[in-house]
Image (cartoon, rainbow over all chains, first blue to last red):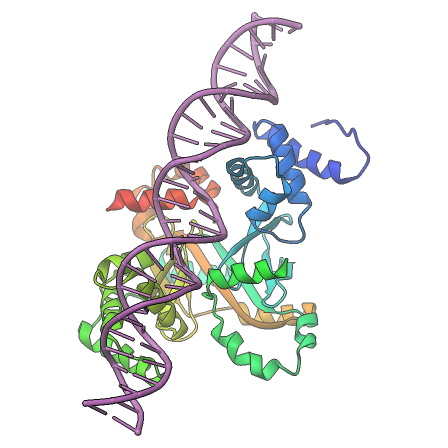
Amino acid sequence: MVSSKRTAPDAMSDIDLIVERLEMRGHRVTESRRRVLAGVLAQPAHFTIDDVVHAARQVGRATVFRTVKLLLDLNILCRILLDDGTLHYRLSTRGHHHHLVCRDCGRVEDFTRCDVPALVRQLARATDYEIEGHWLEVYGRCRACARRDGRARSGRAKNAARRSIGATAGAQRRRRTQAR
Amino acid sequence: MVSSKRTAPDAMSDIDLIVERLEMRGHRVTESRRRVLAGVLAQPAHFTIDDVVHAARQVGRATVFRTVKLLLDLNILCRILLDDGTLHYRLSTRGHHHHLVCRDCGRVEDFTRCDVPALVRQLARATDYEIEGHWLEVYGRCRACARRDGRARSGRAKNAARRSIGATAGAQRRRRTQAR
DNA sequence: CACTAGAATGAGACATGGTCTCATCGAAGC
DNA sequence: GCTTCGATGAGACCATGTCTCATTCTAGTG
């Protein structure tokens, strides 16, 4: 709590903050966990577990999975459901929030405004459910992507409409593979 | 606004309706596809692809996957994101709708009221995204489940809170396996 | 400080969900 | 009846994630 603020504000301090939360919850702080944390913090906005497995190369695969799950539990990470149905991860902003995801480049914006509670109240009345939570993701195209191929737009529109939430995971794999 | 389970007047006519939609879109109507359709229509409210693979036993696994994807494309099926992050399928009610899912028994209600458009407009203004769609699922406990263990509730509450969207797929597998 | 319980680890087998390939079949238009 | 080409099935393959179990290591205790 009155913890070792041993280093100046650099990447380490982020790790230390998370380490503190681990300790507070009674989890042990091991070298592997530190490495996974460093790997996570080194990622861009959002990433797959595989990205972390590569970033924290000395750590076993199973441990990376366990640690990421732990971070989800602690609300240090959150999940993003991409347009194509695959799940990515990202550092969580504090509190209740949702994601606005660009279908083309995968950029993610957080937003905190959430109109759902009113709907939830009405649903609760109408259905007699005890409502405990909800999941909302909004999909679109960021300005850069919309502008980049504004003219091809009408041609792409049909594909975009086709490309439901359920586009294949395989397509996603290929897309990512090509991209690197 | 809450439409409950579809009652099939008789299964054959449902199949024929779907077959018609396939033909209209220029897809061939094969024996395998009929079998998959029959398998899908024989399912309870929601199901996994594996359930369909078992129901349509004479049909190859790959074909079941292909056919289900086709049905998703045609909006005959829709996906449900369960509490634990796994995807299930269900016959789609017409038009835009969302799901209210019971975390305990997995029951699903559709609802069509959707307050998101207002939010979407505001997001579009604030972020300059072209917004194309959204995904909303609401989680809770149906009346039957809430009543069944009303007393154990306080004890379970903590678990429920823990059990984020990210609960393990393994847990889900086990749950389903036990259940049959 | 040494000791110890038990949490965490890593290797690798395993499970699941899904895609791809390719030879073959068969629906439907002519 | 022929022909075309979309659909099929078997099975290999891949990605993601979990489980097991022997071993290691953290952190609390004396």
